[in-house]
Amino acid sequence: MAFIIIKTIILGIVEGLTEFIPVSSTAHLLLVGKIITVPQEFLEVLSISIQAGAILAAVWYFWKTIWSNMTLIPKVIVGFIPTAIVGVTLYPIIKPLFSSTTVIAYALILGGIVLLFITPKDTEQQVTSITYKQSLWIGLMQVFSFIPGVSRAGATLIGGTLAGIPREMIVAFSFLIAIPTILGASVVELTSAPVLSSTEYGLIALGGAVAFAVGLLCIRFFITFLTTKPLSYFGWYRIVVGILVLLFI
Image 1: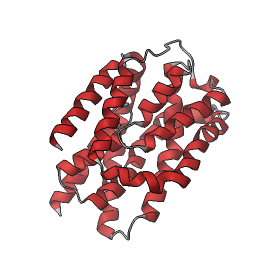
Image 2: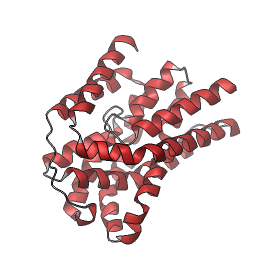
Image 3: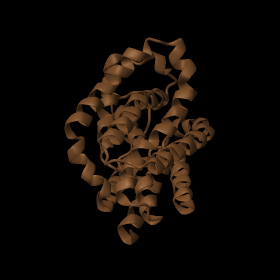
Image 4: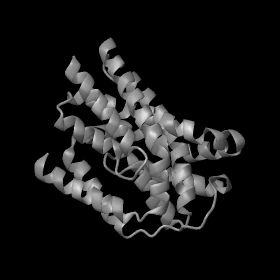
């Protein structure tokens, strides 16, 4: 029992460290879970549901922005619509990809290559000025993150940049639409998964709590890093990790 608790804490730390940057937290959870030998069936449930902990850190971080700008809520709903539709219709088809390290590796590498050539638009523009059209576009880009290894932050950054949306706006809005996306995915995953034991529910709660704590500590740093540093840093990291996965996992 002690070993599975330690493994869950490790995964919670991994989630908190990777949720807010374009390296795919899902890919990292699945890969690290394989390395530390978490049972695959439980790992897949945990890799989705544990993300709710980190995204609650985003709720905490953006709470004042949301509360003082209620006009963002309908825009978040518009951005969430594509994900909701794809999630309901295609998720059963996409879910088997979670067990394929080859898919994860190639998604990491291809996404990394694209990040090497993306030059963000760095004009200062607050998320409160985002339009409905931009909201929908970022939501459409988020759909690609259903493929493990793609990364929600990466997909929205790439798609938003290609559409000429300022980086600061993309990053902030990406986290806002992640709130209903990840919380919804966690509910769907937990309700559709095989019957879980009380111990497994406890482990999910533990992992989520660790992800929340680590995410809360890291979110400000990572958002600043993500909005000011070259995306090539993340691109090279993804490529290296993807190659290592193909060679050794």
